[in-house]
Length: 235
Image (cartoon, rainbow, N blue to C red; front, top):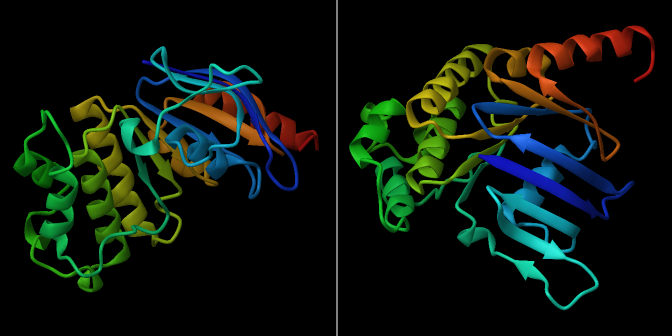
């Protein structure tokens, strides 16, 4: 599966300009300093940014095409089959864990995944009847992951899902992300400001700086180049 990005988007204090083909095998990291455009890029892919100029293709399916012509295309976020997990879990507080998961599962037509197997995969068996306010931060993110998976997306976007967690919870979630990706063969784009986290789980890395792609490639090669650039005081 491939993702073709060729667009620009007004993004204060600079424009986000992306012209890049991404291979979506495994987990692709997106790295950059705060305000570099990482989250805005995910929002554009997910369908939450409607004013961009250009084209986004997922596996040769046009998600959005905006130009001066009349033949414009915009597939709504809920029709893109793309999951999005945020830094805060955004669960329904009035529902318990099981009800949150069932809400997501019932919206999925032509289901292929087994509900109970996803619960087992995400290690939520013992939490199903707990209310959201009884969960730790790491547990909430596990529920958010499971809820996103149960919608059976073609692509899962992760927007700094570990940033509010302690070290132990981060280690556990990183292990779980790898396990999910391998068992379900679900492509992921993972935004983080931690190169250490990205290096643990990612196959490739995209680097953004001030709204522009400055590097993309194998994770170790790109990190080596980043370290070399920083040593020379270029960024």
